[in-house]
Image 1 (cartoon, rainbow, N blue to C red):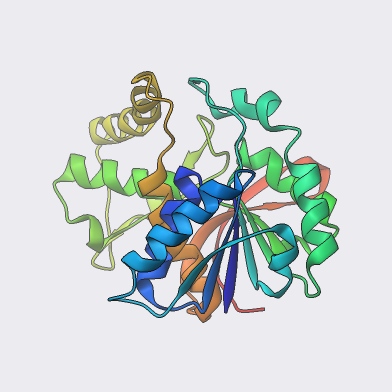
Image 2 (cartoon, rainbow, N blue to C red):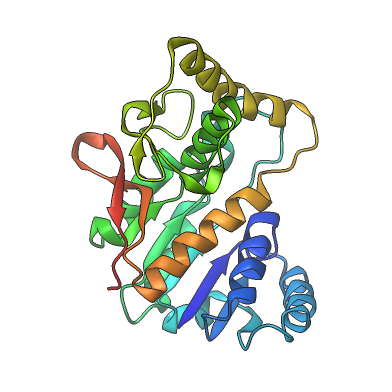
Amino acid sequence: MKLGIIGGAGLLGSTTAFVLGMRDILDEIKLVDLNDNAAKNQAMDMGQAILPFSRTKITPAHYADLGDCEVILVTANMSTRQVTDRSERLKDNMGLLGPITAEIKAVCRQDPIVIICTNPVDVFTYVGWKLMGSDRSKVIGFSSNDTMRLKWAVAEVKGLDYRRLECVCIGEHGDAQVRLLDQMTYDGQPLTLTAEETETVICLTKEWFKEFSGLGIKRSTGWTSGVNLAEMIEAIMTDSKKAAALFCGVRRRVWLQRRCLWRAV
C-alpha cells in the first residue's frame, strides 16, 4: 500500500508522513513538493528516524511517481498570512487545485482516493471532486479536528477521560459547524450537559482557533491535523470500518460532513 502526499515537505504533510511511517502499515510514503530539496531533506531524515520501528519507505517524489498510490493526500497551501477565519484563505489558495488535480488525473492509472486538506476545505473538496470527475466518495475533505476539539472541550468541562468520550461535529469547517451534543456518550452511556456547560463548551471550541491564530506564529495545526489524518488514512488503507467525520461534495453545492464507515475500495 502506497500513499502520496502533495505538499509533503510542509508542516502538515511531513507530520502526517511521520505519524503514519511510525505505524508500519504502509509500504511507501511518497513526498511531493514544489521544493524538491525540501522533500528530499524530509525523506532522508524521516526515513532513518523510523527505521527502528517500521519497514515503511519514505521517498522524495514527483507527480509522475504517484501512479501506483491508493491514496493521495493534498496538503498544499499558498497562504501564510494570519487569518481569523478559514474562508479568508480562499483567494490565496484558489489557484492550487486545478494544476494538482490535472497532474493526479494524468498519472494515476487507477482511481485513487484523494483527501483534500487545503482550506477552506468545504469549498475545495467540492472543487476537487468536480475537477477529478470521479465518484464523490473518492474525493473527501479532512475536518476531523472539529470533532476532536469538541471532545476536548467536553472532557475539560466535565472532567472526563477524553479517550472514553464519543461525540461528533458536523457541518462547515468553521464557525457554522454543528455540535451534536445530544448524541454524546461516555463509556457507551448517554452523556448530557447543563445549559451552562453547553455554553462553556461552545465558547471553548469557538475561541480555540482564534487564540491559536492570534499568536502570530503563521503555523497551522500540524500535530493535531497530522495525527487525525493518520487515523483517517490508516482506517481507509486497512478497511478498519472505523467511524469518522468527513466532507463530501453534493449537488447544489451544499456541504455535508457525515459520520461514516471507512471502507477499502
